[in-house]
Amino acid sequence: MDASHAPRRGLIYCFANQKGGVGKTTTAVNLAAYLAAAGRRVLLVDADSQANATSSLGIDKNREEDSLYDVLLGDATAAEAIIPLDRPAFDGCLHLLPSSVELAGAEVELAAAAQGEREYTLKRALENVRGQYDYVLIDCPPSLGLLTLNALSAADAVIIALQCEYLALEGLMQLHNTITLVLKGLNRSLRIEGIVMTMYDSRTNLSAQVVQEVRSHFPKESFNTLVPRSVRLSEAPSYGLTILEYDPNSRGAVAYKALAEEVIARSEQKVEV
Ligand code: ATP
Ligand code: MG
Image (cartoon, rainbow, N blue to C red; front, top):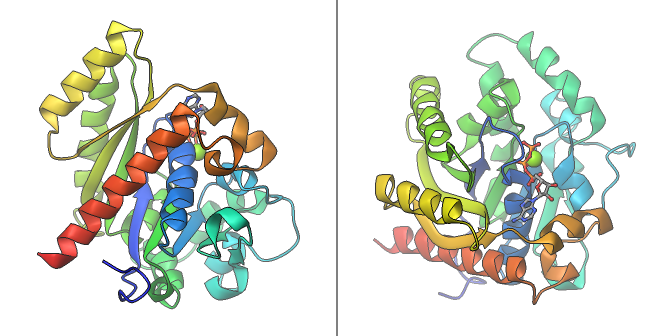
C-alpha cells in the first residue's frame, strides 16, 4: 500500500503497564522512529510527568513552551503544543506532543473535573489532530492514575511492553484483568494490539521460558519480534537520539525496525479485511 495516498486513520495505541521500567518508553520512542522512517506519519504523545520520551528525543522537559499539561488544562490546543521533529532520519514524519515537569500536577487538576468528563480530556484534545497521522502513540506512566485512564480512554488499542523476567506472566495476567475491569465503563472498544517482550537475554533459560509461557497464553497477541537486552538501547536517550539515529546496525535497532514492520502489517491488514 502506498502510504502517501492512504487516508490517515490516526490509529491510537497506548503503552500501558503499571509496572515500572519494563521498556514502555524505549518501545514507544523507537517504534515511533521506525514507523516514521517507513513513511508513516506519527505523533508521539508523552503522557508521563517523568518526561522520558520527551528527553529521549532531545527535548528539554523544563522548556517554557506549551506541553501536554497546557493542553489538558485547556490553555493550549494539541496543534499548538505539538513539535515537528525536523531531523533527517524521520523525513518530517515524526511529531511530539511533549510532557513537562508540570504534568505531575495534571492528575490533581484533572481530578477536580466532573467524573465521566475527566477521563476523556485527552481523547477530546486529540480529536482535531489525529486525522493528520497514521499512528498516535501514547507513552503512559507506570501507574493507573488519571493520565493512564485518559490514555486508555483515548486509545484504539494497548501495546503491552513486558520485560522477560521472573513472574512476568503473573504481572501480565494482573494487567489484563485490570484493563478489562477498569475499561468496562470507559472504552468498550479497546483491544490489546500486541505484547512486546523486551530485554530478552538469549543466554538465560529464564528469558526463553518467559517467551514460551507468554506465547502459549497469548498466541495471537504476542509479537514475533523479541527486543534483546542491549546497552546501545539504554545509551541512546542520553544523547537525545532514537536507536535509528544512534546505532541503526545494533541488535536493538534491528529489533525495533522489525517490530515496526509487524505493527504496520497487523494494522494495515485489518483495514483491508
Ligand atoms: P517507567 O515505568 O519508569 O516509565 P518504562 O517502562 O518506560 O519505565 P524504559 O524507560 O523504557 O521503561 O526502560 C527502563 C530502563 O531500561 C531505561 O534505562 C532503558 O534505557 C532501559 N532499557 C529499556 N529497554 C532496554 C533493552 N532492550 N536493553 C537494555 N536496556 C533497556
Ligand atoms: Mg517510561
